[in-house]
Length: 64
Image 1: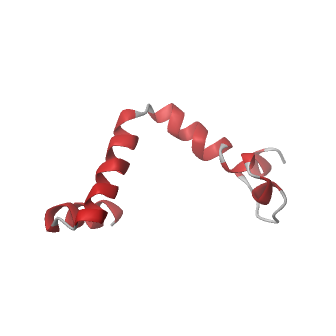
Image 2: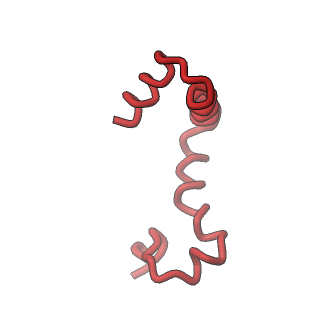
C-alpha cells in the first residue's frame, strides 16, 4: 500500500510530496540492502531516548 500511495503521488504531481518520494526512492535504490538492514537493526539504539525507553528492541529479542 505504501508503494501505491507513493506511485499515486508521483502520477498526480503534487510538487512537495513528489520530490519527497523521489528522494526516498533514490535513497533506497542507491544503498545496498545490507546497509539498510544494519540501519534498521542498529540505528534506533544510537539515540538516548530509545535506549531509555521501555520498548523492546530487536537486539533485546535475540539476546534472551
